[in-house]
Image 1: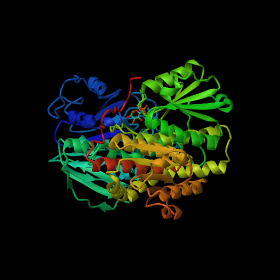
Image 2: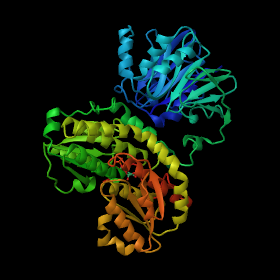
Image 3: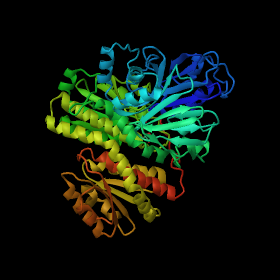
Image 4: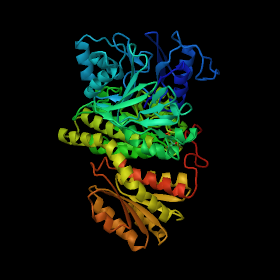
Length: 623
Ligand code: G6P
């Protein structure tokens, strides 16, 4: 999740690029850089840390406004074409060398990239064999060298040929010293938008980067290449066939633009889940049969002899941990104990050197989770942090870190960080199984294939259920209470769905293991109770169906989440939402999506501010 911006036009562009990056900083902020082209020379400034550090490296004061006008550019005379990037590291450590823009061998071609080039290892090998010299550890630098390899005087052609050899999900913008009036950009699965101004053109990963300058935009689709000049943009597809695209006018204000046209950050972030999961899993599943978690610093002996795993977390992260427990136990056959961090830290836990303690915290700053992790470490356990934020306290307190890569989450109610955490737990479960030879290879291969399909299946889920969820929300928006029931790996999905509903709609909810319903919650059921049942395919679906029949017998309304292709569930439900089929252990990452949307639409129909629910904070640093 990086931010990219490019400009070509008549104005000095350094400050325009910085202003654009400031609007994209939420996408990534561990390093940043710009390249400017003037007088046939490309000049680059890069800095580790947030944009303040880049501004300092350029010589801009912290308080100096970025006007977009007049200021002296790094290159002389002032450059009127350039690229900017704000990085959220995926390949390669957070260093100045790994910050973008990246150049080719001649430093005449520069690129900025968002996303991941999956076949970077093979391509780098081929390029090195052909004599290319690399200066960074990134997958992005490959793209500059690929363009160099194909360049014969036509930048668009070189980008098109390079693009055809890349695999993965990415968007990039390229600039060449011999073409002072042209940028060429391309996209595959990652966003890229062109902004058409008066005698100037922008290209960026999101509209806010240039909204202050122009409202006329051209959206790029997958496998399209755009050549951008001060006079406009020309799009071709990967075969070189010209593509006609209408210029659209954006009518959003700045705030709406930051939400990408969505009415709220929460809805935008729900829709960002395919990308968040793709970023989290793609390069960790480099082939069809193994998981690469080489970043995890645990010795093979420790992993082999590991006696037990303890997972500690709070809130939504706790629910991701619960799903992780099922996956680890099912695949790696290691016993997993799960605890709420604020309980664990005060209960004198029995923990020691044979234990791996995993703290899951998207912010990396939740006080109780940090305290639980520190306590375990003091008692000799190895501690892993699963977090979304580089440099957060959890990363400093842990022995090793597994990052989710969801990008910054603005909505208080966690959504995309949850699915990214769940994906990370699946990776960990598979990696432990692989490291301990605990599971047959063909099963590993099957689940890996399923995991790889999850980003697009989340997209399909959102598309196929959203309208219906809104209708269901409308029919239940005034209900005083929602009950959620599930079994086994469906239970954490219920807990998360119920938490979302109560925290943003303020409607009381309860989530229960369906088998426990007869021991109490059944007393709550009458005609006014919507009961959300997670009834996706699993070895215990029959049990769940019996529970649903019991609920129905009390006159309550059953809203079921079922797997596509299953007809039985709809027979015992009043309303059914289907999610695509996948491995049953992986199914929760899809099943939770309709529940996020249900909570969202109930809250919105009731006129509530879902991004900032009352009494809640995004990060809870008090104990
Ligand atoms: C707060 C947030 C929740 C989050 C929890 C844990 O309560 O409102 O959305 O799940 O903290 O946060 P963490 O950053 O540790 O994942």
